[in-house]
Length: 283
Ligand SMILES: Cc1cc2nc3c(=O)[nH]c(=O)nc-3n(C[C@H](O)[C@H](O)[C@H](O)COP(=O)(O)OP(=O)(O)OC[C@H]3O[C@@H](n4cnc5c(N)ncnc54)[C@H](O)[C@@H]3O)c2cc1C
Ligand code: FES
Image (cartoon, rainbow, N blue to C red; front, side, top):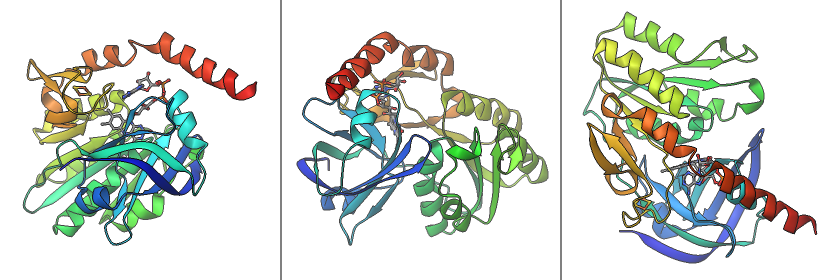
């Protein structure tokens, strides 16, 4: 069931790390139905664009839903300015298919950048199902790190990496991932969420080991309900719509190069929209 709700109260909006915000809002129907891997479409104000954000946490008893976002352009900038007690203009969800898990065994969860928040519900659900979870978290540098405690406390083993060595081990998530894959042959699945280039690199690595790998894709979405076609991705040579067929897909079948090029299609227009909105606020 998808719930479309107008005027949703913001319960809190806090800065977690550089350019990263954690927004909690009251939406009991979404909180009740949300599963790992699902997302909401939301608009901060009536003039904001509608954007997809993954449900990072939900509390059915409190009726709250939490999203974590990185300020990228106009819409995420609008969201970052929202204050406790204000109302979001529009929210619909939970959308997309829930993540599927093996019945038992060991799994590895990999989160990079903003993906640290997106992988948390996956870790929690695996832990609730009794799976043994190893988590690998990667950031570019320490100022982008958040929720290290939440991620590590839900995992049997936890690795942290940073590109520049300012926190955790210096290097990419693929370093500890390769060590884990070399050390054991009982890993049932790898789940990866983060920048497209990270997910592609993880897919290339796990393909060598023949380990099933699921990625959460982030193409441009407009309606989030399968009607507009903007979120099309190529998987196993076929066109799929990430909002209704995903966002999770088999990483070894995804055409990442096409996804990368489609994500930059509207860069000029997005820059214009951000500058126009910023100018308006400064006047
Ligand atoms: C299923 C899904 C879940 C996502 N979950 C998260 C999340 O939890 N946290 C988070 O920070 N980001 C998430 N994203 C990406 C997020 O939607 C974009 O960063 C956001 O839409 C940027 O909008 P903007 O106006 O601020 O930036 P813009 O300047 O408009 O765009 C910056 C970049 O964001 C991407 N983008 C722009 N518009 C959209 C759109 N409508 N749909 C998807 N991508 C877009 C493009 O790559 C673009 O180049 C998710 C994307 C998808 C598809
Ligand atoms: S966002 Fe329109 S079809 Fe998926």
